[in-house]
Length: 610
Image (cartoon, rainbow, N blue to C red):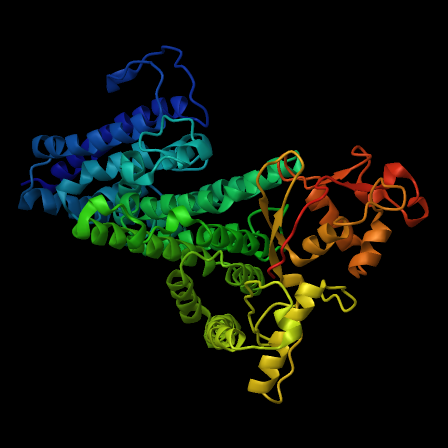
């Protein structure tokens, strides 16, 4: 067998195939260069492709089909036998010598091309290697397939032809197959895996990034851009109410975004560990403000606050915490058990989702502060719909951050349990009390929580607050009981945490109304029980502060605003000059009728359980 002649023939076949696929790649390059453009209808050459509009997914599908066709080309032009292998070895050796001497007998021969085609001396890899090198590789760049115009739609949805952006991310990723993203990763993996074990003979010492490296970097840029779009949405210009509503959607959208990235990693990128590391880097940067100039240096404080609010809203949502006892009896025992199990799974899934974001947030101390404050409010007001769910989430925080992170919050639950025991004992004590001064007071239902200093957040104190005789009597009665039972302990009353149920009769109502208010609101309402001011037009802020003992003027204004400027149906007090804001009043204008708050519930009857 004439090996020299066979080597020359193989060289001509390789060159012919390279020229064909090089022209085909150039034709595609005109159509997928940054933006989709219409072909001028020029001659498509021997490729047999018509000059019509093409997209990046079509190009990837075309390359995939060419690679499938390469097996038929190989069996026809390059039969696998000992002579062909020997000729490939001789051709590779000749190319290596020509490269060292920087000369070649055929100027059309590319040493790197022949090296890539002949390095493993296997005829089955010749045509695939030429297709990957000449048709695919030139377009796997930031000006080609990896340009955001082409890449991002493919990463957003399964066909790459959608509008992209946040609208596509709201689609459930579980319904997507990511066919084009999967095809892109597969082709990049083939190109990386088929790279010659020895580098380009002309660049033996030069390092270069692989196709997978370029795709991984582009995936990181995509993730940071999409995540930043979600973060910025809550800070758009507009009214505070609009921004507040937009902020409520940030955490749910971030959770959907994370699931979308995980689906891409699992389905499209075959759980590649390098892409997994990039996914974690994306979440770190997005959640901690590193990907946005607007929130640069934030350290995740804003996301930590929003995440705590998201948890608080869920743990106060009774509809999301349906228990088995609340299920319709018609479902039967088995149906109730199955539904209860589904609710437990839903709560567990929610907590796991929150923790998956929480572990990437750097400002865990900010989350602790807001979560602790909200937890205290839920426990004290009885708005926590499930203590089991609360404890389960605390256990996850403890496992993630250690015992010191949750010790105070666990102490809150111990205080609540101790308070229930104390109130049970106090109820028995109250039923046996015979003190005449106490018996003369109208009976009321009292619930006192005994809190340990240091476990709970710091609340404002009102040392000069003026309580009603009814509340003072109940306070004295509980202090006597507590001091007799727990000698040596000192209790301090936190008036800012008190709540009351007020029964009021309005002139135009035939039945009484129950008003759930805090202690400061109740004291303000009591100011109007028998007093409408010297001129009968109501009371000024200064007069209210004097009657209630609330020294903080700002707090008094907030209380009056909550009672007079709320939604329709919740305005218990009427402000005479409604167009003038309450916080614009000054002590020097207290005699002006336009600066007075007037009672709307005259001749009302109240009973005051604390």
